[in-house]
Each structure stands twice: as structure tokens, then as C-alpha cells.
Image (cartoon, rainbow, N blue to C red; front, top):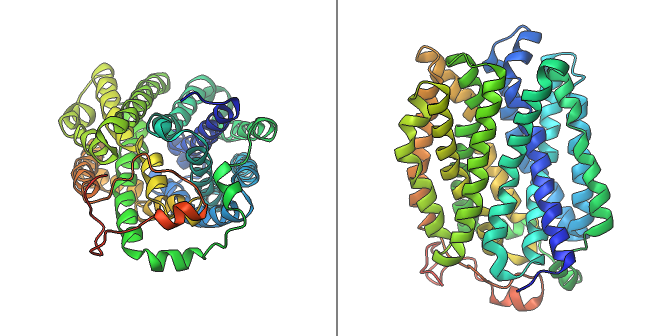
Length: 419
């Protein structure tokens, strides 16, 4: 089915929104060492900023998701992008580590709102058969943001320092101009705007088995992504003593792998199903682990990182479609983002845990990262096969979908056979 101009604009805006949100987040992972030096503290202390950002994201998912379910996806997305851009700018002016931690906490609230609202707007607007590939493209916004942050680090860091890098992070606010001019409201939300909506607490109580399952699944997913991304630049800088330029190049390489993985496995999920595509991508990490975490030399490390991110973001590339198809339709802007970000909350200590493991093993960051990545790849592949499959279902907020939607199997369990 051919896409309309408006559908293409929605897809582009949602992809760029997540790209620029991730860009603002990943600027932090490249400058942990610089911030620690500025404030005369340990890197492990600075990683608390990452933990706080991740931990506060569920609050943003709840606030912005509920606003989007009530007032529409488009205006809330605009406000969200402006907020996270301004907070990132303010981070460059932090006068102490405490002030920076506070600002990154507020940034976490803003960051937590974007994914759920943007993915709901996209999945409700595009043709159902395009969801798999669009899911991969949308989730590829995350490594695209990481790649952009790597380029800024490599090209500008030595000129503008860590404070200047955060100040560059205000640029995503310009996306608002495109959204206001070209992006329409979700047709599904428009159809259901007069439908009475339950509170999110009522939905979580009503569908508690689904909610718990999704939160546990997304906890494993967030350990998978942050466990292979957040400390990797520090691993290259501190353990392998690579230059800023080399680290930037390797980061670009593995984020290209992430983009490829997301799009390939997202597209594949339209043919073999969401769950099988996720399990296949997650298990791909296991044979890659030795090269990714224990190789020596920049070329071998770059190849290992490229392959690892094909696995990690290949699994993640299916998630936007999977969560939106599994979401209760009356809270679709809230539920996917909330369970995703609650998973982030439970995985928020990842960077600090890995840094502590590394410290206990003679600053061997590779060991800490390998333990986490190997474990969660197995957990994800097992958990996802327990879930349902609603590939291709019609998304909307009208009474037809509300009547059709069933959150759990008839026997009261989460697991059912595929459609």
C-alpha cells in the first residue's frame, strides 16, 4: 500500500524525534571522564547521572502519555521535544555535580515521554503491513542519535569541551517547526477522541498480567541495550587507551550496525512474526561476545561492536510495533511508553553495576559488559516466546478495536498461540 505525504511526514517526524532525543542522552556517555575530572570525582559517581536519567523516564512516559491520550499525540510531542532540548542546553551550564545530576533527572522525565507518544502517532497513522519495517526504522532513531553524538564528539569535543557538547543539544528544538507545519494528528486518536478513557491505574489493574510481563520483558531489553552501549566508549578510552578520534569512529561503525539490525529484523518480523524475529536477534549476541568484549586492536573491536549492535538493535527494532500492537487501545500513548520506561527504571543501575564489576576485576570493563549482555540475551529469547502475537492487527481507539482487543488468553495466562 502506498503511503500518503502526511504518513511520510509522521514517520519522518517520529524517527527524528527519537533520534534527537537519543542524541541528547548519548552526549553524556562520551564525556563521563571529562565531567569526573571537572568535578574531581570518580567516573562511577558520574554514572549516577545516567542512572537517574533512566530511572525518571517512567514519570515522563506517564505524564506525557496521559496528556497525549487526552489532548492528542501531535501537540504533546511538540512540547516534549522543546523541553528535553532546553534541559540539555542547561546541562552545559552545571556548576557542580549535584546540579548536573538534578538537570539530568529532569531530562529523564522529558526523555521518557517522547518514545511512547511518537511511536503511538506513527503506528496509528501508517498502513498495518508497513509496521514491521517502520518499527525498525523508528527504533533505528536510537542508534542514529548515538551515531550523531559520536560524530559531534569526534569533530567538536576537543574544540568546545563537554559543556559545549551539551549546548549543541538544544538544536533538536528546531524539529518542532517541521512538526507544526507538516504532521497531522493521529487518525485513530481523532476517531476515538470522544470515547471515555479509563485511568492508567485502572488499566494496569485490569490487565495486570500483561503489564507485569511487559515490564519484566522491557527490563531485560534495557539491560541489553544500555549494557552494551553506555560504558562502551569508556571501555575503549580507559581499558584500550584509544584516542578520541578512534573511539568516535568505532562508535559510528557500531551504530551503523545497530541501524542495519533494526531495519532488517523489523522487516523480517512481518514475515516470521514479532516474537521469532526478536528471539533470533537476541541469540545472535552469544557468538559475538568474545570478539566484542575481549578482542584487542581497534579493528577487531569495531567488528565485534558492529555485530553486537546488529543483535541488540535487531531485537529492539521489533519493539515499537510489538508494544503498540499489544497495548490496550484506550491508553496506547501511555501503556507502551510506561512499560518501556519502567523497564528502564529497573535497569537504571546498569552502568553503575558494570563500573563496579569492572573495578573489582582490575578495571576490566569488558568482563562486566559480557556478563550482562550474555545473560539478558538468553532471558529475552526465553521471555519473548511466552508472549502473544498480534501482528497486523488494526490499531485504533474506536469501539470496534476496544471490543476486539483481548489483553490475555482465555485461560488467564499471558502466553497464547500466534495468530
